[in-house]
Length: 88
Image 1 (cartoon, helix red, strand yellow):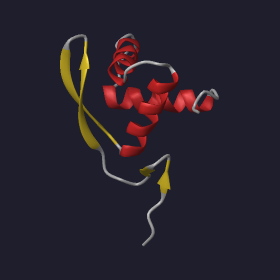
Image 2 (cartoon, one colour; image 1 turned 135 degrees about the horizontal axis):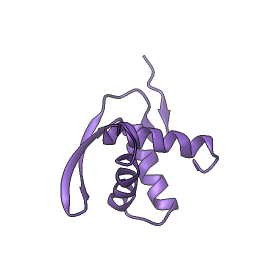
Image 3 (cartoon, helix red, strand yellow; image 1 turned 30 degrees about the horizontal axis):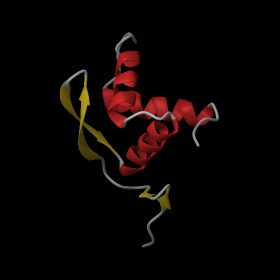
Image 4 (cartoon, helix red, strand yellow; image 1 turned 180 degrees about the horizontal axis):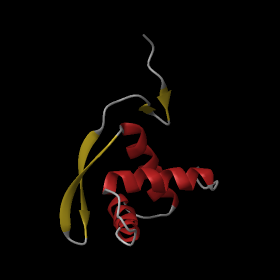
């Protein structure tokens, strides 16, 4: 069976847990490799470290009622970015 690859990451792959630092605190986020790649590219395009971009997304998400989980908020942020045409 062939694997579909997009943006340098296998598209259909289980989530991968990675640590990030938000406001001086480490936390783990589980995202599929495709979303990690999109997040890395978004941070690069905005000339920010990934941790800084995740902190910005986190600050936005906690304003929502009810606030989604951080991984879901990152996926939604990336989807909105792609739809709005800044998805690279």
